[in-house]
Length: 97
Image (cartoon, rainbow, N blue to C red):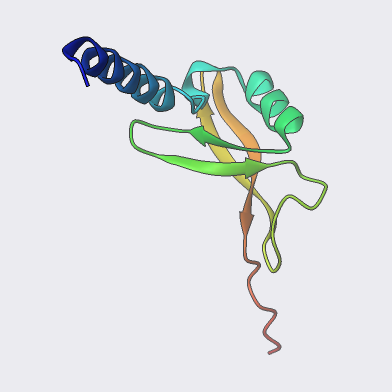
């Protein structure tokens, strides 16, 4: 491979890597309404909620969680405060007293 081909390949890898790093939307840069609308339109999406934190959030209805997980309320930081969203969690077992 020529030097020009090597440089072109390296440039393509750098561009692809930077695009993947920015592919996850950050809730802190959106309003609560934008965050909820994005989740509703995607059915389920992975969102950044902090510098090194992220999670998968889903619609309240539908079968976006795999069994035995169910949508549970969670709160994420947004540009206009805390926002209620849903995250798949395994429900606590019912223990009789």
